[in-house]
Image (cartoon, rainbow, N blue to C red):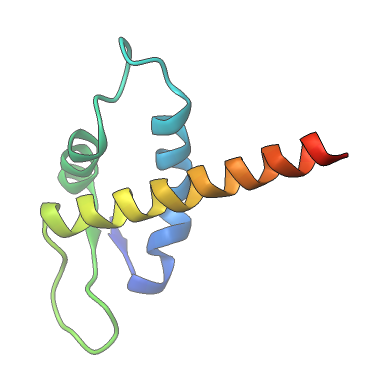
Length: 84
């Protein structure tokens, strides 16, 4: 499967949510583990002006950034609920 650069975040979001919501003793072991697993079945195109596909390390970096963004979003949602 090939994931285009513009579709990368949309594709990764459910996987990262699963990573965030799991218990440590089961399932995915971390961002690097997830990057390796996804890289085995999917290739992710580089950005628009670049040819080729991203490496596992780059995919791991993307996953970390997305995880941080989703965790910040959850914190903001939690703050809003407390204020109501």
